[in-house]
Length: 374
Image (cartoon, rainbow, N blue to C red; front, side, top):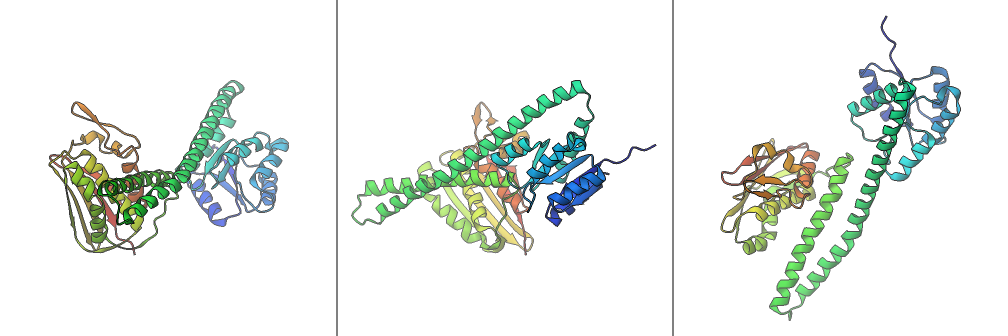
């Protein structure tokens, strides 16, 4: 006789969220009951006796925390698995969920497969005997502590990012004021220009870190507008011209005119990071070339250098944070201070595009394909 499907109660005041969770779980053979408020959820629990409860945190009237506490006071709800679903990825929400009696905590937006795995895991844990349950409780405490550490790290990163932006912008502003002085000595003018360049580099790193975090949370969303790719590439190569001269590298732009619907700020920073990466690895006396083409299907960007190549088996990993790539007898950090290429991948994929590496023979070619968006 086939085993009855596990029943899951989904409580959320947003009908779209309910529909997504319901479709995801029913596709995996769960029996789904829904409720659009905390009070309705408690009534549904009493009537349906579900095997697992998915709870939204923020709901009008009775929020998810109150619902969970009320469930835990019921004899039938003392050990039913409760998974919180919330868009509020912060330490206070996580700790409050644990205090209310949650078994798991899943941040929105979630991947459908991730939701199914977490529900199945909580249901399996309910079936364990007492000895295994002790091991589970230990593993759960360790998992919860890791989650708390991750949220603390994200909060610290956010503080660092936002606290750095203002002083860096102030540095750049004061350097600009110095450069406007007509009687500024040439040596001081050169120093002020260098300060501006380094301030821009630091600000780019700050924004890279912030956008990588947004991408990991599924919140890096491009703002589409017409972007002239030829103009964009031309401005970036012009900004890096002095840096290339100092490095003894010829920086060449071969950018065809053409417009693409994209987030101009994100794409500009993609090109900046790729050019920055290329210049840092290009030997003196070589060439870095930036190419872009636009057609009816989208745009292609190619940034090539003649520096140390990247082994084929490392070309996917180089987009991870803080990766170092062995090249011959040396270890070469091709990830641009550990964040540049990670940001590029996140920004390109946010446009539904692709980024990959080809062999420059010698050197490396970073390739970007951006599809056409209406």
